[in-house]
Image (cartoon, rainbow, N blue to C red):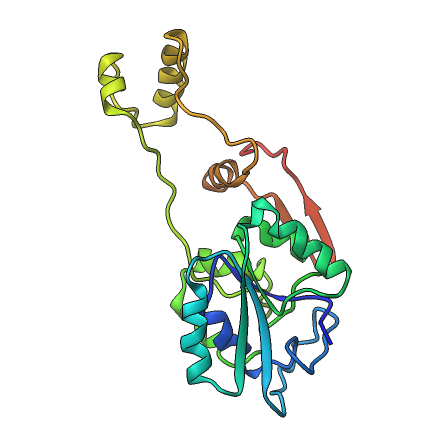
Length: 238
């Protein structure tokens, strides 16, 4: 029987299979329900098979290694298109139909969309989860807890800094130095625009770049107080 929610993995997580070892949510022969369904994390009484949906190439090879080492906790992996290319919508449809996978790859900035719809299991009380906190920075861990002291909704693994790349030859041709501040960046943008070019572009189908810049500026799109959630994309940082 499929659960109505799934245990999410922020970015990509082999580590998430470890976190699931003591949980009775999802997998063959287990049920699911509310956000507190995993609160006790009672171990399964028998073998389990967990469905894992991801878009990471060669993840099937990683799963093979896991399955050989853990005969009682088998993982069945499905490699699909990346989240923004349709997998997220499929997840939402599957959640509505109560046919969601047990583990899903979800990017940090998309986790709140699943949380506000009650689509994530709370695995904070599962064996190994609280101990894993020390392995991550506070900022990264907060991304999967939403600031809730005892709750954890995903296991982080993949993260990286944002960076701006530039064409050195074009800047030199335009007689511009590399901007060191956002103010200089804005001034250079005006100059480059006047020359018939653009200093950058925002991908219309991917909010990640903009979300990252807002986060860097101290913006907070989602906040909650108990069961009440606030969504605000109009703060000064945004």
